[in-house]
Amino acid sequence: MMYNIDANRADLQRRAEALMTGSLNRYQMTVKIARRAKQFRFEDFNNPDASVVKPIVRAIVEMSDELAQPELLHEELP
Image (cartoon, rainbow, N blue to C red; front, side, top):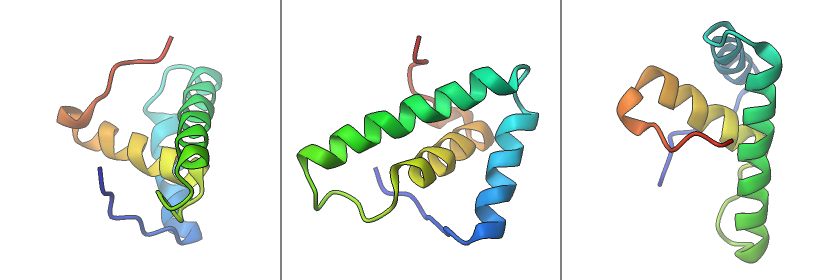
């Protein structure tokens, strides 16, 4: 899946804050972001040419897009 990633600091901060304010529990959202980033890191480890975007940035962007566009939702991680 390709994402339009504008990884400048202000955009990334805005996206992260939107995730946190959209969540009932900031800790649980932080854990979900970390799990998604860890998943991306392992995917990228197996295929080093897969992405040049850091896994944490990719996780924040993907999850904020899912928040804005619910049709993109993946299965929730436990």
